[in-house]
Structures are given as C-alpha cells and as structure tokens.
Image (cartoon, rainbow, N blue to C red; front, side, top):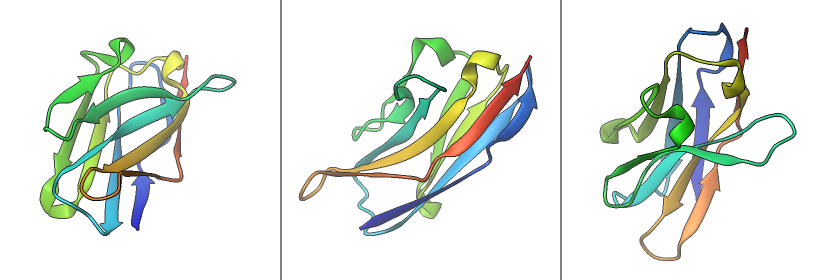
Length: 118
C-alpha cells in the first residue's frame, strides 16, 4: 500500500504562484510513475504533469512554460510549481503514484483545492 499526502493548495490571484507537494509513504519502489492530475469544476479529471517510469516529464499543453514538476527521491516527494496562474487553473489537484514493479497499481491522494481569482 502507498499513501499520498498533498499540501500547498489555496487561493491566489491571477498571475500568482503556488507550490504543491505530494509526499508518498508505504511500499515505495524506486521505479514508479508520479504526477499530478486536476479536476476543474464540472469537468473531467485531466493530466497536468508527470514523471514517467523512465524519468521523463510530460506536461499538458495548457500548463507548459508555467508549471514545473520536480521530485526529491530521498523524501519520496513530488512537487508542482505553478507560476502565472490563471482562473482556468482553478481545480482540485490530485497527486498519483503508479507502481510499476510487481502488480501494477495506482494510488491517489485526497486532492487539494487550487482557486485562482481574476
């Protein structure tokens, strides 16, 4: 089992910045995929940014150049630095961890609200 705890959400004005953190604990394997999805009000969950199992990063087109995903392997923590925030970035942001070794399984955090006011 893997537990994910997110933090860092909140209310910010357009143009501002926030940094989200996601700390993983439990049965963590060094080879995994981690990243962030978000779910805007009334819409489906969408990928924001991720680390693939090979260590590459992927970003949604809508956040490229504004958001940066990073990780601290020693702390089993992944971060999402969000700059130049827009009202359309308002969503619940979810961290996920996909176990690649052994049975493939995906775990989700509880979500953290990000609200960007215009």
